[in-house]
Length: 286
Ligand code: SAM
Image (cartoon, rainbow, N blue to C red; front, top):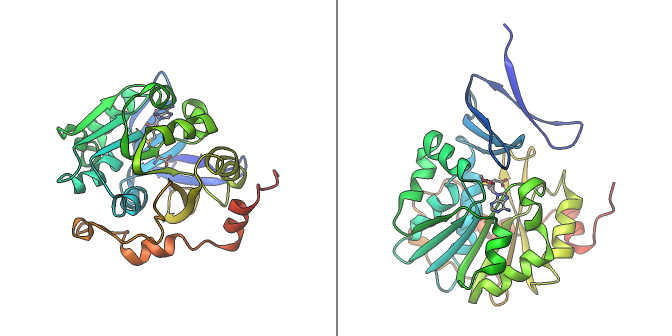
């Protein structure tokens, strides 16, 4: 086998996930992060930001379906949605399955370069931004949520890891502002990292930012192959709805799902013992 390039994400300083690069399609440093798009045999096109996998064409459905449908299926009203981050369009694409109810989706993405690059290389996701309900705000999500007077039925935090521009989005201040921006009966959900490789990050987010603010918060899991070897967590918060047990209200919208269904919804909240331990007690830092 001749020489070839590898693109790798390190989950710790010592191990990670590697991709054999067929072709680099885009590489640039924006005002916020390194942006890399490359072609692979196994996963189609891949987007990496700051050396972390954001999406691959092959498995993005796992993450985006499991970020959106568990909350969109059970929330009472689904008129106004806020997405913080989400610059690749995968979250908005899944939200538009509910476009007969949704009146407005505000997407607060700090880096407009990510939107531009994803419109170019991932149009099957980012073309969702062209929908008339979608309003893209190029702003820091912390700054937006702390200053907006808007109220939302659903708030989805689809951001990068807690380093660099996203670090502020893992704070108690951020979640206090999220709570203020939710309508009565509203729900918030955040991607909350790998419970296997990032137990202390998840524990810190859970015990120091989310649980002190939301009495009714739950963690659920999904398999996202290219995210830290697959096990990924999501934190869901509401003052009035038990997302795990609440009845699905919009089943007819699930025709295109390749991951989500009602059984998966219920099962996603069943946690392995080591994850239960993280949400029960703050993990000991290694
Ligand atoms: N699914 C991915 C994950 O779980 O890591 C997230 C994908 S999405 C591309 C992440 C987006 O969050 C990036 O486009 C990044 O620019 C954006 N972001 C990071 N920090 C932000 C902040 N403070 N405010 C708004 N957007 C932010």
